[in-house]
Amino acid sequence: MIWLTLREHRAQLAVMALTATLLALGLFVMGNYAAAERIALGVDTCIPLPNTNSNCVDLSVEWMRRIGPAPYLVGALLLVPALAASFVGGPLFGGELERGTHRLALTQAVSRVRWGATKIGLALAIALACAVVLAQLGWSARVLNGLPGGIKTPFDGFEVDGPPMVGYWLFGIGVGGLIGAWSRRALTGMFVGLLLFVGARALVGFELRPYYEPPLVAYDRTDWFARQAPSYPSGAWVLHTQDVDAQDRPVDSREMDRLMQRFGPSAMAGGPTNPADYLATVGVRKRIIYQPAERYAKFQWIELGIFTSLAAGCALLTIVLMRRRDA
Image (cartoon, rainbow, N blue to C red; front, top):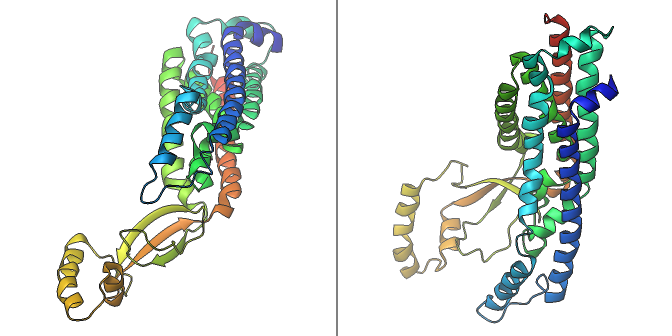
């Protein structure tokens, strides 16, 4: 059965493996080159000139010119799990059921469970190998994105670094295979599987990931010119900021305008001459909701667990569906 599955789907599986290999090589080579050029130019150690940072900006621009289109490799790293879901997972069962060629395998003393489990298991195994290799190259994606040059939170590279990448690949194959088996159509499996994959990624990324653990809260002065260091830890993932009053109630723009109209008369009467100091005296402060950087690794493993569980559920449902479906 393994040999038959490999022969039947050799084109899709070979293209998937080749794409992952070429992408890994590109990320490794260009990541090292970009890191070396960044050090040679001194982008991350640049000291701004008085009253301007144009010299450091020029160094960053020169670095980007030297690496050329290499940052597009990061976009490819995000895209390939979706392509695997569509072009490998979708036709895995849908194409064979649509053509009726599955009947040949089922007449060779092969049970439906073994047939379905072998096909989905082999595709998941190859996808796992591809994902594990690419998951080791998150450092390259960070370099190509310029993350060492000023973006201080590790969460900016969350989806291209480490364990989540493995979960994305497995879920892509699983959901594409499930939709193909359910619809008996390759194109339906490819299109709907892709939509479900993208939808699940968006739902988890925007709605669940920020709350894998209860976020923390910090308070700062409302300083529009950022002259004061923030009170939350360095590297934190800031989820939301809002101006609030002393009772922690949100201060809307109209209320802020009303308060600021009193700033001038207050300063002339001997009050604070700094807007941030004035707002602090009337109880206005900025509330910051954030996730600390030390939760980054834990969040990655949580996301791996979510998508691996979804992939396992899709694979199991596919096998059950094939067992109960007529020829």
